Image (cartoon, rainbow, N blue to C red; front, side, top):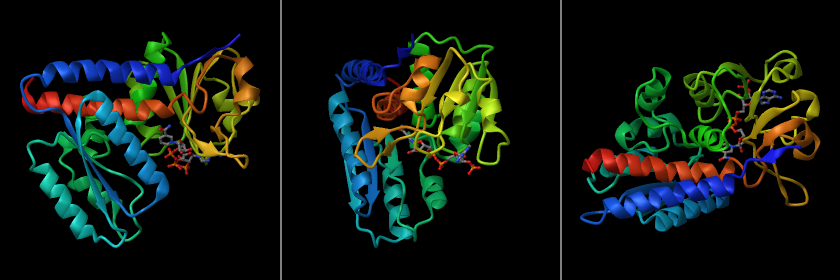
Length: 283
Ligand code: NDP
């Protein structure tokens, strides 16, 4: 009999903790503030930005939304970031990705002051994570660590397989699991015999962007399975990279899609913004 890791409930608990702390800390001064830049009119990005704004309201944060048209130049985006970097009332700066093709994402990420990079994408923060120093950690993998810890999953000494090596999920995830003393293997599209590797995992974390690729043949009995993928199926339902119905009985714990990893990303963004606020105000 498997258990479900309830990302909705855990993310709610984190947002409530952040809200309570933010309320207490802003009794005698300004509130934490997140600035979000959206370039263009991609409908999915607009929904994500709207959700971030709602989460800020819920947590008692101020939020600044900067909406720039599709034809905005890279220079204009960099100028806006420079303004936000020097604005003392802004704690976090997030640029919603993907950006229009004529804007270089790397240049934009590099322009953000690392102390306001609440997405944890700046190379300074990525480097800090790698060498075990404090800094902002990419929200989705940081959220997965919270899911595991708050579900009492013992990580130390366990075999962990991460499938996917993107800069925002797979790589930071592997480093975080290493920091928690798991024995970590990272797989990718060139891995030979993926099944043989994933079947070794006590904790299997899947971030490949391929709907329902992971079936029960990939999973060891009693494994904990974390599914990062999000896809919309032909009948408009959401599914993950893991075939939940096929895999669940083989697991001890599993995240559903929706309601697993997804809600954690915004909760961790709020947590990072609060940390930046505390760093900046010394409260
Ligand atoms: P990317 O496309 O950037 O990376 C996918 C990774 O999976 C790559 O490293 C790729 O390998 C690997 N991969 C692809 N196909 C296979 C395969 N058949 N076997 C083994 N490895 C494979 O994706 P992201 O990391 O950005 O996202 C992954 C998924 O997570 C997506 O569905 C995305 O929508 C979702 N996501 C969800 C978030 C949330 O908040 N819940 C946040 C971020 C992402 P290679 O490097 O060799 O190309």
